Image (cartoon, rainbow, N blue to C red):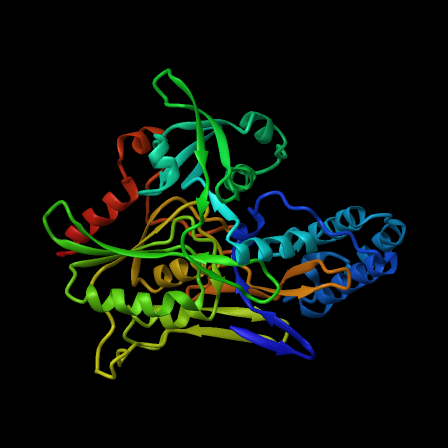
Length: 444
């Protein structure tokens, strides 16, 4: 959903804390040569929040007083880093998600890296489990798999930097979900880097053997897509068949971000799975994306134009109404999928993914499995500030059709299935297994 406000172009995003963007590797940060641009950047950020925040009371925060208090520090900032610290403190006063400052250098360097094919990763993902960062997934055919890395192993150090030291920097006040996100972000930043360069991992296989493995990063998979001033996203989509315990067939759809590029693959998957006994939509690790896609994607599994929820904004409300699919890409008449729908979520499922899962759950159209989601469901706009930084700021608040507010709360699974290191090491996907068993219980 893209809109133009005055002379600025802004994309309406629901992307967690835009976790996929913020987890970029270390970048050089451009320095603004004009000190006046720093003060102008502070003023612009303050005004944008004042003019677009969905709550005119700012959750009880005196926004005028915050501006008066912090502006002298912005005027005294001698570097962009000092100015950013002031702006981040200002945003932090709101205590809400989707208020993020992206430094100009981080955005510009990542855009250049994507264009030159330099951005790479080792082909693994991680999660924080019981105080340890554990390999949660190893991409088939990727460099980590080739190097012998396996799910369930803990990552103890990355290029000589102890993971415990990274975790020790996290604020003690973080709850388990926030700590999981911050741990994932900190480690992922160090795993990623130039394609072709090696990253040295110190790992524990969980049975008493420590290993040091050098993994050569490969280009990140997926289609690179740029949204406005943000760094490129890599869009990945997959589909496959799974057999239930009773021998029924279920179609499994997984994608990593809500961008327009998933539209046609999703349509193709629904067509391929038309005769499936059940459908599983895997949104684990999906931080969100373009909120407007919810209505079209929901229309593949809802036969009536019902509302998943509503977005409260400064100027009013927007209802997210499903758009039932009646015609396929070939112009042939079709109907939405009518079988049982399961959705898989975890602590890194955010924003648009939360709105989709919570919306279908509130309507009774889907059953949710996994772990409680991130609880960062606000949609956001982005704007480039006078010093080149990009401000991401929330402009709406999502409430499901049953009146549940997802911000701070997240989506609670109907069947909680906590992730464990033992399951990862044993190749057990407990959330998927529970979803497949539920499809059997519904009659397949």
